[in-house]
Length: 422
Image (cartoon, rainbow, N blue to C red; front, top):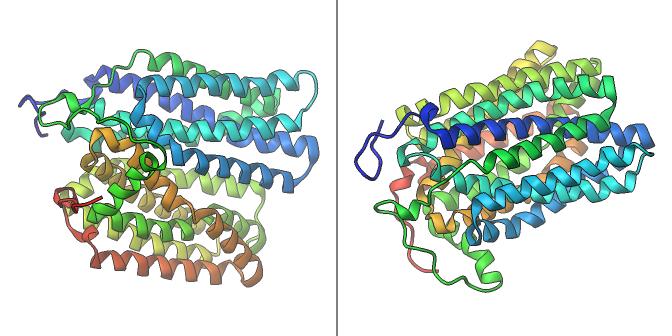
């Protein structure tokens, strides 16, 4: 383990009170999110029986998230980040609590069209701010390990959360599950009051204090400019835009394949998605080791190449266990590459820009995702899952191989200098 800026050996993460509290409350919050992820569609179905309204609500949430992402980085870089995290959780607790309170009287579908977009927008702001806070909770050499730890516990929460949500919904109704989510946000807000992240500009060798804020769109676009100037981040942003286009709709393809092609009941889809989350947990354990031994380039490129193979095999899988295994490999590869990518951004981005760079990165490479998901599902309905998965898998492998021609291939791209100019 390396030493911090003062030359002292950093404390292990399990002895870092700030990080431990942050990890605990955010894991609880992620588990709470799983409650609403299951309960919101159930509320719509019970009240209207309309799948179209479910899709409309999901699309509205996605649009709100992307719109918030444009400005989330400016907020994260211009205000107190801990206060921003607390405010997002506190407001989400209040907003989500409105749903079970309203349902005590009678179902109010219109309220969901207000609550869900607001919750999605606040969630995006929270995620951007959360990425900027992590480097201030751990020593400089512990960022990769901290992200792996967070990713692992979040994956565990995403396994147990839906199970608990299903039990609560069955016993007390979906509105009770949403009430539990509101409670998790409230606990998270209180817990964050006890977290004290430091500013990396305060440590030796850190960045200079923030300059006078720029005005208008120039301030919003500064993150995109930073991504473009850094050779590795520029290549990552471009390639991940295509990879997100190919992979965002994979859950829908898996469910459609199980239901339509293999004739399986709904429980089979739950079994596959829950077991596949084990791949995310394995990625949390493996990513730091892989990057340390193989280097960033081999780890990221190899992960997405194997991801493409797994996508192709999903369409060819003829049994539930084989679908589960390939889905597990898929999430393992995506998780490993994702942890490496996020850690690289945190390592090379000045603290004063980290919010805007994170916001720009997510907004740009996620923009094509909804279009890709729509095309993949349309193609599966028209040509079959086998054809679509083979095409998506081969394209994914080809995209990963293209990365060998870019600065991503370097084992330590964090050492590459950014290009001069605006």
